[in-house]
Length: 294
Image (cartoon, rainbow, N blue to C red; front, side, top):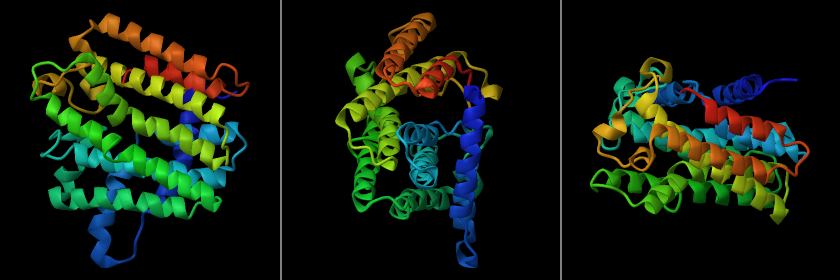
């Protein structure tokens, strides 16, 4: 039986192969744009979101050849958000996954447009997924809603404004991360269900609750690693949130208390899927993300 790291690597390889084939051009006038897109999409990472799409789809009998379109689409949206987050007008980061950020290589204009192209390209992939018209329609709605003003983009706006406040209210902090990080993670399990053409409300509720707890725990661990993590191992500069004056979970908890809170949320996430006989991979993933070092 594969352990969770082996499963992650296996699915990541499949998604990366699919993305590599999907993001290519022979048009000489567009080579720099596609190079910028590929630079960030193929930069590695855990591929947690597409992993969730493929895992949930498999749990409910979906076909991988359909689900991978939705998994890749979600990863393209996630990558676009990272490119834009790293821009000088946003978080102004120089490193991402141990490499110079996109705009450091291709310039701000091309990096911005590469992000735009990844976002729009994601919906092209969904349309080509081979799923029923209803599933495609719902997948487009799910991803657009999670990525837009009431989801990830709204969370990013809240994050940008947080540095202007002396200290965020705790509930506002939860809301911000539920939008900025949690929305795409919740979208991943919803897309997995759609890839399996599963419309059962009970399954949607259970899997979405799992994802929301998972996403919040993920962010708490991120905040702890930003203070205590090894910069070389993480592949990015640590301490950025403190420098920017942003409120994090460590404004409210010690690192030990924060990790206990993350563990409690992880246990809640696992509890949401405990009644599914084939949910072992989801519970393994929750534990893996809690214990990660980068």
